[in-house]
Structure formats: C-alpha cells, structure tokens
Amino acid sequence: MYSMDRRTFLAGSAAAATTAGLAACGRSSSGASGSAAGSSSGAAAGDTINYFITNPTSIDPFDIEEFNGAAVAFQLFDPLTVYDYANMELKPLTAESWESNDTADVWTFHIKKGLKFHDGTDVTAKSFKFSWERICDPNTTTSPSIISYHLQPVKGYDDMVNGKADELAGVTCPDDYTLQVELNAPFADFPFVVSCTPLAPVADCAKDDFNAFFTKPIGNGPFMMADDWEDGQYIDLVPFPDYGGDEPAKVDGVHFAIYKDSDTAFREFEGGNLDMCDIPAGRIKETIEKYGQSEDGYTVEAGKQTLLGEVMYTEYLAYNVNDETLSDKRVRQALSLAINRQNLCDTLYEGTAVPSGDIVPPGIKGNDETTWVYTAYDPDKAGQLLDEAGYTADADGNRGISLKIMVSTSSNLDEFASMQNDWKQIGVDVQIEQLEYATMLDKYTDGSYQIGSRGWTADYPIMYNFLQPLMYSTAGDNVSHYASEEFDAKLDEACGTVDEDARVALMHEADAIGAEDMPIIPILHKALNKVGSDRFKNLMVDAGRTPELRYAELA
Image 1 (cartoon, rainbow, N blue to C red):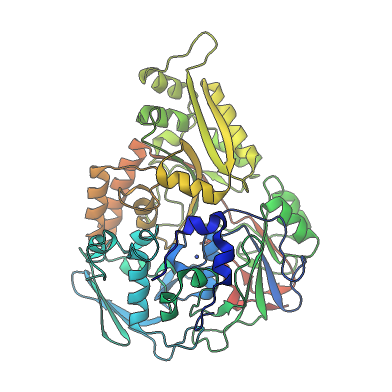
Image 2: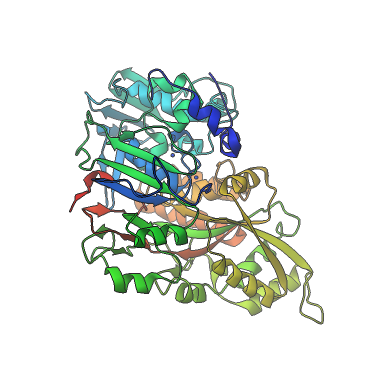
C-alpha cells in the first residue's frame, strides 16, 4: 500500500496527491489562501451553499481531528450511529439497530442493506472493519492515525497499532451486514463512540492510493466530492444521487470556501458571497442588530440569522509537561490562576462566552464547573505558587520565567494579548508565536513547544470524549504528553462500569485528577457565533458545531 505522512502532504506534496488518479474512486486548521477560488473567486452560483472554513488538515476519516475537516467529512460520510442534538438522543444511521451482551463488552451492529458508496460499491460490515483497521495500521502511512484512540477499547487495538497484528482481533463480520465488536472491558457508551466521523465506513478503493483518496475521498453520505480538494482554496460537493439515508440533500451543492481568518470571510459574507460565516471577535452585537438572532440558536431564518446556541466545545491551552519550567505543576496552576477569563468573555465575546471551570462543557452529563479549581481568577494565589516553586520576584516583579505560546495564524491575537498581560502582572514573560496549524501539529506531536492554543468539540457528547483524548497517556490528541497511572486507571474503571450514574461519577473522579495535575488550562466555553444568509431555509449548525446541510433548501 502506498503511504505518505499527512504532515508531508500539508507541507507541500499536494500537487503529487491531486494529480494522482483513482480509477474507481474519484476529515484538524491552517490557511494557505486569503480567497476562495474555483473557476472564479466569488461565491458559487445558484442553489449552492457557500460555507466558510479555514483550510482543513484532512477530510479523510483517517485523520479527522479538527472541526473544519469534520464539517466537510460529515457531509461525505455516514457512520453507524448519529447523535441528534435537537432531541438529545442517539439514533441509527448506517446501522439499523444494535445490541450488546449482558456485560456490555460485545456489541453487535446490524447494517442497513442496499446502501452505496459514491463509487457505486456496497456498504457492508467489512467496510467498517477495513476503515477501522486502516486508522490503526501503522503501515497505512508511517504510523497509526492520530485519532485511532477512538478504538482503544476494542480487543486487539494495542497489538495492531504496535505492528504486532494486521487486523483488529475484536472486530468480526459474521455476514455481510453484521458487525460484531468485542471490547477489552465493558463499555456501555460504545454506541456513542461509533457515531464519530473517523469511524465511518471507507470504500475498498481507498486501498489503491492513499494520496488520491485523501484529496477526493469516497464516502457514503448525502454529498459527494465534485472534484479534488483544492488545498487552501475550496472544496466543492454535490448531492449523491443514490444516497440511501433518511433524507437526501435538497440543494445543488456545497462550496466550502477556504479563508485564512474570520475577518476576511466576514467581509465576504457582508458582500453577499457567503451563506455561513464565523463572527469575528468584538462584532457579535452589531451582527445581531443587523441580521437578527436565531430563536433556537442553531437554525437560520430570514431576519433571525445570528446563531448563538450553546455548543459542546471548550477552548483550552495545552502545556508541554516535559518542558523544564512547565514540568512543575505549581507553575501550570499559577499560570491558569492568573488569567482573567471573565474579562475575556465580557470584552472579546460580548457576554456570549462563559469562563471554563471544567474541561467538560455544559450540556454533557457530568459537567461540573467547580472541578478545575485553578481556573479561578486569583493572581495572589498564583504568586504564592510561583514562590513555592522557587520563582520569587525580583525588585521589578520579574520571576525569571520566559515562555512562548503558539497560536494559529487564523487566531484573533487580542485574546492572547490579554492573557499575555495577565501573566505579566505576576512577573511571567510570555511571547506569542503565530504558526500555520499544520506546523503546530508537528510541534505538538514531537513536544517542541511550551504552551499552545487548542479547542475541543465533542465527537460524541459524553465525558469520555474530553477526558480520554486530551489526558489519557496513549491518546494521540494528548499533546501535553501527560502520563498519569492514577488518571488512566480511574478512566479505565469508569469505562468498565455498566451503570450510567456510577460510570459518570467515576469519570468525574478522573476529571478531578486531571484538574489537580493541570496538563491543560480550560479557558472558555463559547457559543456557536455564526451568522447565515437568508437565501436558504433549514440552514443549521448543531451543538457539535457541525453543519447539517442535507436539510437546507433554497428559501
């Protein structure tokens, strides 16, 4: 199988990838262009949704780890289940039903018959087995996917990601439409896990050429790729005519217009060239005054176009816990205590964001905003902790600590300048370094950074999806390189607990361990902060920040 490192692609190998064809075949943020282009730089014409994103790191399920890529991939791929945020329930999608044994460590999913991939081939149980093994196999590229941790509960996961096996022992297909999954331990929330896009089925043609599939993936969702992803410019989708899901797409297509930042995109929106756009910091109230506010917070109606619904998202900072200065948790705690989160919420987000007191956001069962005690604003306590750590202030108030925080080139620097000033008040010098997101990913992976700006949106709305990826020792998105046997053991105990209330209580105990060790700093829980045009009705973005574009239609 041809392999290529994802970061190599992002660094400049797109040309080779996009010119490679697939005979049978035709979801992480950086920006490479300030304008969306195709045959023209303006909006796509007709009954086509023009949707703003920054440049994704992937639209292939193999590497969906940020919400721009997820926004595209959600249109292209249907996993086994889907979470209905409006009704707060898990529903069938590609699976028509599922059940477990009494101990919840063997799950059986029954696949709907007659479903097709965009290349006309059948979606079967083996399509899921192939997809899941593809993200775990170190030979797919140069290592297992960064998001393979979703499958960590599955029997045989460790052997496969470590190159000791070429298939997942726990995944079997008794027949073409039955997928059986044996887990290492009971896990009653597993049907939520398989609702995430990275675990969607993948067509066999992905075996032929990883690069070509990466730029023009073949899915089973309501939309299909119109052409290759034009890196840094646009991604065009059209409806899949043979879609067998609950409801086919009603529009002519989707034009994902790629811009470097929300300021540039917002100007395009005001010029009539975008149908959905993020609202830049500091411009929320004026947007509400001009376009009106959505009643439910998620759906655009004419004159009620500003979306401010609560989202299952936490903005946070990641520490490199192996850094010489930041290896002392008292320093990590102090830096968090110094941040005036309420000031950020009131000034930059005009009251639409709230300070984070938990890495788990509101709306997810188990959220407790009193858990992360070092998120309180207490600069005096911060100073005491730095004194205890041996960083006493000199006559000018300086403590001899110099750090760097890396932020994306698409980020609004006002937020980080405010934090920079907060840290200066306790005698800590922090310099801001803006980088392309792909470069940030490299630094997160190899540990060549000190502090980094991050955000996490729920792949599935349970505590596990925040605690495991961000702090479990072997998780690919644990960019802090935090390793705590106590935390891992408590989370494992929680996963193996069948009773939901008891499971959530144990998850909270794991959360509290992380809160004390502070490998990350929860900052804010934001609202959706998007605005849509009045050209479409049923144009919506859910509480997972995912656009549900199959339901949109011309107004």
